[in-house]
Image 1 (cartoon, rainbow, N blue to C red):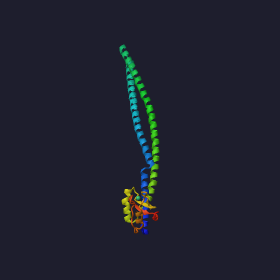
Image 2 (image 1 turned 60 degrees about the vertical axis):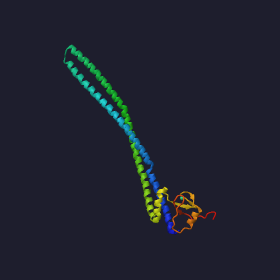
Image 3 (image 1 turned 60 degrees about the horizontal axis):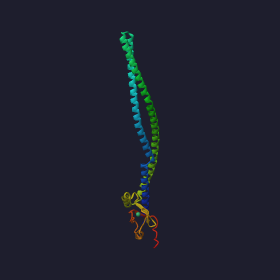
Image 4 (image 1 turned 180 degrees about the horizontal axis):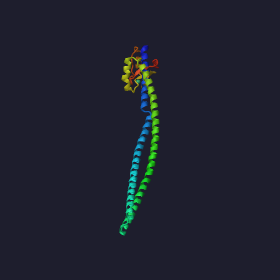
Length: 250
Ligand SMILES: [Zn+2]
């Protein structure tokens, strides 16, 4: 095999190493643990937001009820004042009795409203403490997510940088591979899991780990320089990395 062909095959092997490395880097970039962590944190924030919305709606409802009761108690208070003023300005005994009875009844009504208002206010307290707890959990998660996002971007940046370096090296290697050989590699690689070139080590294809038949080894040994061989078993381009070892029976 002529030196240039051997160089071409060596360059092709190196190019394949870069492609394999690039594929690993892309895989790592798609599966960064920080991304999974961030997704988990974002999921927890989203679930907290649902809880927060529920608690917040509950607080609004209770506050509305409290305000309504307060407003109603004030109205009753104003009615009591009006009747008290009317009673103070005189009237028959029967009228006085009727007014006193109405005032009593209105006062009872006001007490009930005030009790209900107090109950609504008390009911708000646990909801407010829930809200405070949820809000502080959310703030904590948002801080964690921000930190995670930063780490994710750093990790992705490191991998991207490595990928850029790999791509640059690959570019240099591609020029050293004869175009026909490169075309063969590009055609085979997608079908062979990205590994289209294998070394022939001690009569074994290191792509599929199978021994080549003696006849094939002979053919490789006696072939004119520049011949491209494929492994019969897996179809990979074979690169004799060491002198073809003589078989024991030879
Ligand atoms: Zn093979």
